[in-house]
Amino acid sequence: MVSADVLRGYTETVILRKLMEGDTYGYEISHMISEVSGGEIDIKDATIYIAFRRMEESELIKAYWGNDDTGGARRRYYTITEKGKEYYKEKSSEWLKINKILMKLIIGDEQK
Amino acid sequence: MVSADVLRGYTETVILRKLMEGDTYGYEISHMISEVSGGEIDIKDATIYIAFRRMEESELIKAYWGNDDTGGARRRYYTITEKGKEYYKEKSSEWLKINKILMKLIIGDEQK
DNA sequence: TTAAGTATTTAATCTGTTTAGATACATAAT
DNA sequence: ATTATGTATCTAAACAGATTAAATACTTAA
Image 1 (cartoon, rainbow over the protein chains, first blue to last red):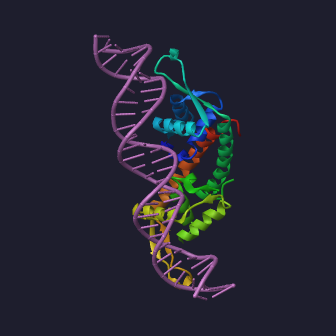
Image 2 (spheres, each protein chain N blue to C red):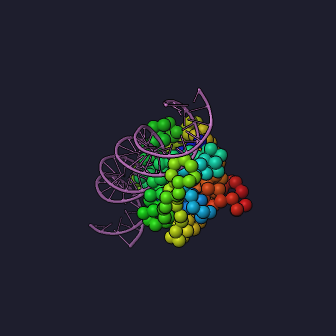
């Protein structure tokens, strides 16, 4: 299991991708990352909440409080903005490009 | 062009991979990264020299001064140790694994 | 003699993640 | 009743690794 440092610079992109499927909240994202990664990536909740705040400040997302009838503690939901969608598009294609370069730098050219 | 933050946690792995092909020095690694990445990754020399120091302390590499007959400034060469080779093996396979997960988290499942 | 290329090093700063707590509500178990 | 567990958010301080910005020094070409 590795820390979320492996997605440094792309934590926001991961969150935005999830938000593109619909509004969601921190606790759920944290569980989604753990699930999708098969427990391999250990992201701390603080990391997500701080990322939310950064993204709200830069207007990539908007927040609202969920209603209380879901049981459990109150939830703060987030919606992706148009600016957020554009940012996701840029960063995800950047990642695809960088990823190929990293393959060369870390593994080398011998693999197909 | 992105900063070397995109390879945070794997800078050492990139250096070790280069060292597995033979001894080399900081300035050359810096140029190699710039070349292999087609100028897309902007790694600062300080980043490399600090990584060298960390790796020397943890005995992943060993250093020696090159002789002066190469022209230009003196060079400090590095050799990978057995421990370094093992570390490379671990980190490179970790990266392959994490990379697949990041593909799911950043891009999603719809691509082949 | 000036500029440009080669080459290393260090201190201070920045950014994003982690650590380590606190708070609060609902439900199941003792 | 009260304790434990799960759900859910938030913050301050610490930490790690990268960047900034500077200094040093040698060689070769203009």
